[in-house]
Image (cartoon, rainbow, N blue to C red; front, side, top):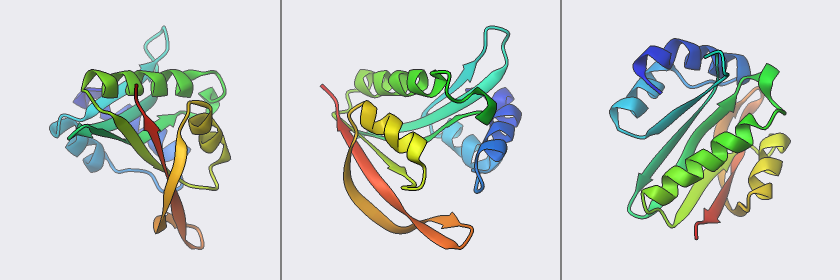
Length: 142
């Protein structure tokens, strides 16, 4: 991901989530030297993105998004595999993430790759009717 990708990244984020990240958050991630990646089609169309922070032997998957009309094609799984490879290359021993329990598709993907629930963060996500807890999941890296 580069600064020139931010318009498309924010557009995809806004179309995919009821409570999207802002352009400023993505710009801060780039400035902080997080692992920031995009998914593009063979024609160069940006259809997804992922953000991973790594430090002190741990990684945290902060954001992963595939444009809604391109979901179910394996792009999210491929991006997640790439993010896990980035964590391994940076010598992380474990990857953490938070996910909405109501996001069944994401929960299924994470479980299929070996992520296990390790806790909850009460009231973590804004929701249409107040807030929603976050399911914290972790994957030990070999």
